[in-house]
Amino acid sequence: MSVSQLLDGLKEAALTLSTLRPEAQIFVMKLLPSGRNWNPRREVVANVNSKLESVLKGIATVIDCDMASLGPHDCIEPGMMFDFAHLTQEGYSKVFESVFNTLNNFLSM
View 1 (cartoon, rainbow, N blue to C red):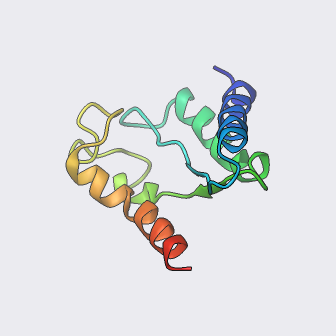
View 2 (tube, rainbow, N blue to C red):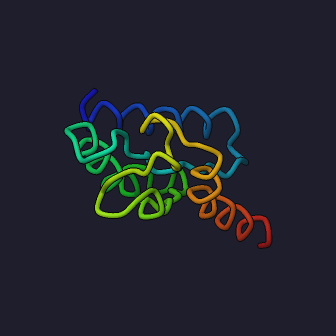
View 3 (cartoon, rainbow, N blue to C red):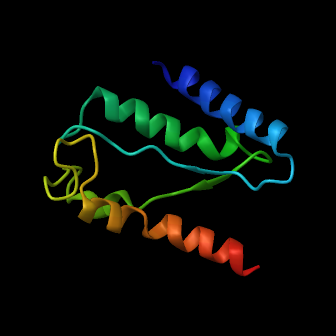
């Protein structure tokens, strides 16, 4: 998929949710990288993530996860993603801290 196709799909999903549940607050997490080292797919993910907030402005809150916790020097550690595409329990714990904090702040309002 291209960057524009991914952004269009994410926007359409958020707009559909907004239409179905206009009172709901929608949160969208930035995409996670895949592959142990830098690769073309990561370039697509980085481009999507850099444009996501502007595309979803007024529709959804974008949550920026701590990608640095996955490993140093743009390398994903096996302890974070066992197959370099899916998070391990440790990976979920680190990456989803920002999701927890964002939702906790929202619910505390």
